[in-house]
Length: 294
Image (cartoon, rainbow, N blue to C red):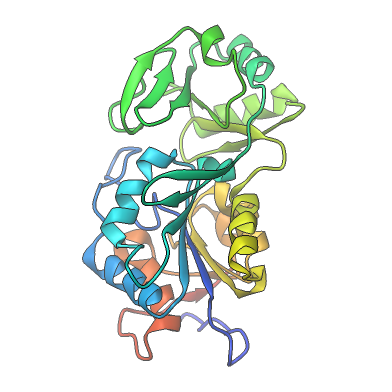
C-alpha cells in the first residue's frame, strides 16, 4: 500500500495554485511529444472548484502566451466575481493578465551568442522565438504540433538580432542525453537553460524561471509563497517546486522531478492534478490516493 502523504498544518489551504499545462492539465499523445488540446472534464471541474473556493489559480508554463490563453478559456479562470486571470508564460519571462491580454512584466536577454554556440556544436538544430500574437519565427519548421500558432521562416541572425524573452532549441533527430551533453559543453554565461522531455532546450535570461514569474504574481496578490500549491511534471518546474509551500509532481515525471517535489500524485492519464486539488477543495475525494515523494 502506498503511504499517504503528510499534510501541512491542519489549517493550511492553498491561496495560490500554480499549474503547469503540458503533462499536468493536458495529457500526452501516445508515442509523440505533443499533447491533446482539451483538458479532461475531471481536471477541469477540480480546477473550477479551486477557483470558486477563492484560490488564485495561475497557469505557469514554458508555452508562449498565445498557447496559454486558450487553456485559460477552457478552465474559465475569469468571471464577474474575480478579476482577470494571471498567467506566467515563457518559463517566467512573461507575466500577463487575461482577458484581454496585458503583458505586465517581461524579461529579455541577448541570445545571439548562446544561439551561435549551440549551432556550432549542433548545426542541425531548429531555432525558434516567439512572434507574439501569431506564433513563432523559426529557422526551419518544427515537427507538426510542437508549436502553437504559425511558423514564419526567418534567418537565424535576424531571429536573435534583438533581445528576446525565450529561445527554443530543438532537434528531432537527437536525444535528451545529446542535449544534456550539449548543455555541459556550452558554458552559457548570462543565459539559463532548461531541457525538456525530448531533445528540446529553452534558453532564458539568468535567474528567470516559473518561480520568478510566480513571485511577481504573488507580490501583486499579497500572497506568500508558503501559501502556494504548485503542480507540474517537467524539469522547468524545479525552481517552482523549490519556491512553493507545497510542490506536487505528476506520477509520470522523471525521477529528478519526482525527487524534488514534496509529494507525487497520480499520472496525468489518471487525472493526478485533480486528485491533488481535491485534497484541498473538496472534503471527500474518491479519485484515488497519492504517494510520498522520493
